[in-house]
Image (cartoon, rainbow, N blue to C red):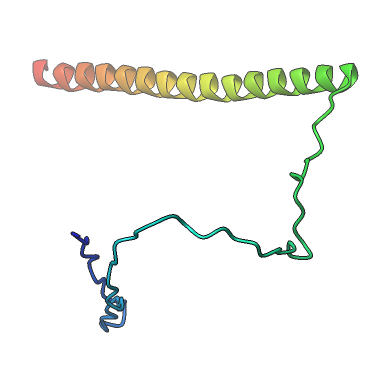
Length: 112
């Protein structure tokens, strides 16, 4: 049987810990499997039934509050993003105006 070789990763200290697997012989199985007649009890913390988590129950007032909170959050984030975009646009326009004024001042000095 082909077994994949797992790479050995060095630890941060520089030590290499090899992955040791004891060699096991594979024997072919002939015949039928024996029937298990053992009776095991589950561990004390385990039971056969699945654990049901409580479902989230939203009342109409809770649903309205959740929708209002989500809408408010979207509006606040939108206002912040728009204000940041406006700040960048105003800064760019003011820099452009300053560049035009400086250019006209420097060109005016060369003509006199």
